[in-house]
Length: 223
Image (cartoon, rainbow, N blue to C red; front, side, top):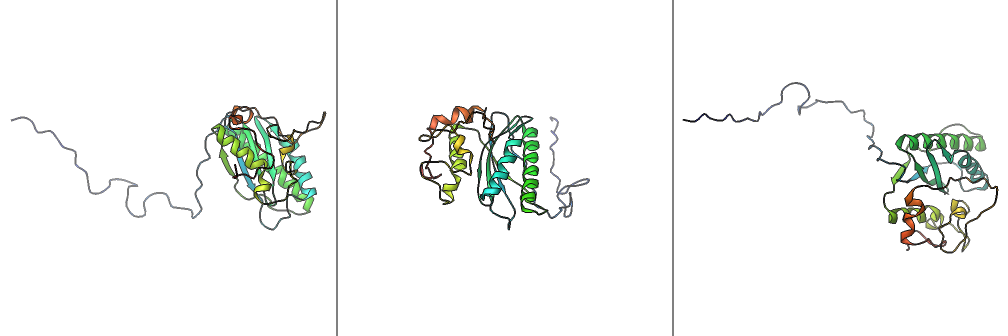
């Protein structure tokens, strides 16, 4: 008779530490567990949404916007991080950012938000938290996505129903410096120090144009 082949049996209980028994494993802290940030590189721009805490003055007021422009000018390009476009709304900001890698992005955003919080607190003569604890980011990977986000960020005021002069970009955005409008010429003033850095990624320089220039009066979602 031939030798019987041993068959591996499944045990009805676990051996050792851990396993599926009640109470096993690391105890929860009661805090919400956040998902890891997505991978990014110099070729993948990021759309970042930053909210301020409730009860603060509108960011679209004249003094607040001038304060933010000063912060953007100082922080728009440093150590592989570039702030390419922005839009200021009453209680939040939309930013388009390029970064060499995840570390450059994280450090650049941290520096920008710290300087922004300090500057606004000085303006308001207050102390304490300004920016909500966690910002939202959306990594762009294809031309159509990049075109949609450019339109969304630069024309975000129109999306929120805020009155903007017809035929012109929102003055609380970087739209006046944008060269991709279908029907508006970008502002070029020699010697003017801009609050944004020049885009370098293929998606934000060439790729998005595959889907057409953006009408200056477009309400995002209507095209």
